[in-house]
Image (tube, rainbow, N blue to C red; front, top):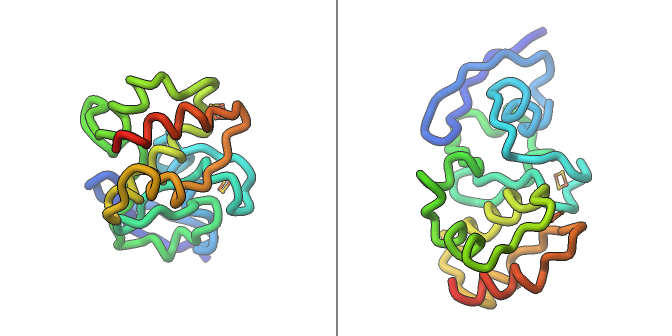
Length: 147
Ligand code: FES
Ligand code: FES
């Protein structure tokens, strides 16, 4: 039996219908709402490519039931800031962090969540466990150091 849910994503309500309320939130964000900045990597809560903020906390959307995200404030990379003005985005551009870029929206959402929780500099770095196949870790650390 299908279920209708309302997801608040980047400040906008989206009413969606799903056949399975345990479907991953990531599928709803990408396939039903059409925001493709959030990526699928491992699907098993390890890589962090799918990270979004839910009520200000970084969550791996590949492993969060869409039904448990209903009615909560979801922020994706598209809603992190207007015109790439979040301090983490500014630092990422300054330090030219990305290589292929695939992991980077998830990394930035993890960094933003850590900042929102009050972390700065190296304490952000210890909160962010995202994986980067291109190994941009050194540039990530340099960008995070100034936050
Ligand atoms: S795709 Fe979600 S943690 Fe890897
Ligand atoms: S920049 Fe390519 S996977 Fe991280």
